[in-house]
Length: 100
Image (cartoon, rainbow, N blue to C red; front, side, top):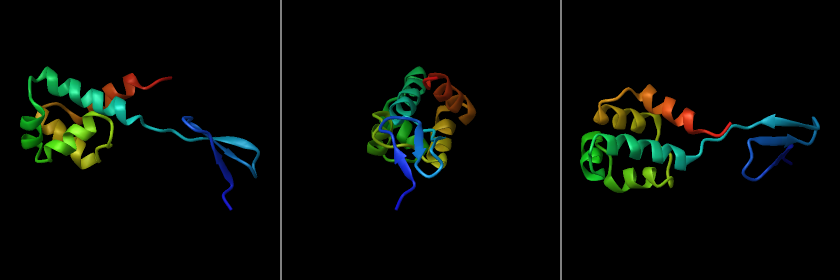
């Protein structure tokens, strides 16, 4: 039996045995996708060109930008190299857009 009760769309998990909430951070894939799309548009690149430069499928990049998939670190690194930006700049922008 699970000791946790999950709150839908929340960062908290309730531990029924401890009787307390446990911090459960989540990353909104829509924010991640919007940030990647914004960086791509700033460079005036199409999804097809960026996906080719990053050596990932165009449909995969499209799904990332729509928030249907989260990129792995490897994929995020490939995208950042293809965009000629530091991966940390992308991560920083994602963090800036996260709700408090």
